[in-house]
Length: 143
Image 1: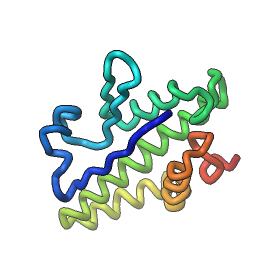
Image 2: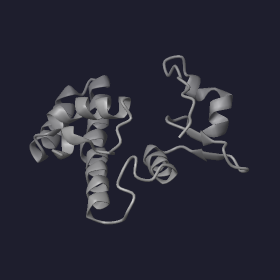
Image 3: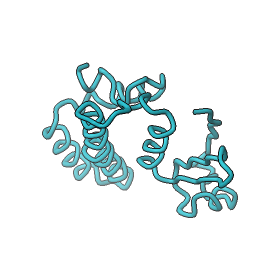
């Protein structure tokens, strides 16, 4: 999928600029703008962007054919989003507001649910950075 990445300086509140708010009224990131068709599509939610990318390039992010392999990829992806990323974000914001003890409780719960949580972030970031041919690569799935 051809793309142009545009960095936003969140500290400078570029995500609150009128041009960006016209694309994403909530001022959140990421935002994907697909101008390859006659009607420009704007997608503002990370999970929806992942599904768009999967449909754009079948077989690159997850197995193209429905079945156990594809189910496994999406099961692991949504586990990662809901059980690792979401609690991690919550803990981050609690720490930023001075509630480190509450953040520690969230971390402990996530880590006790799955010990791989402690080591999953770095492989995931590497996977995304190198545009792996599989959605959840060998560092997480063991494949």
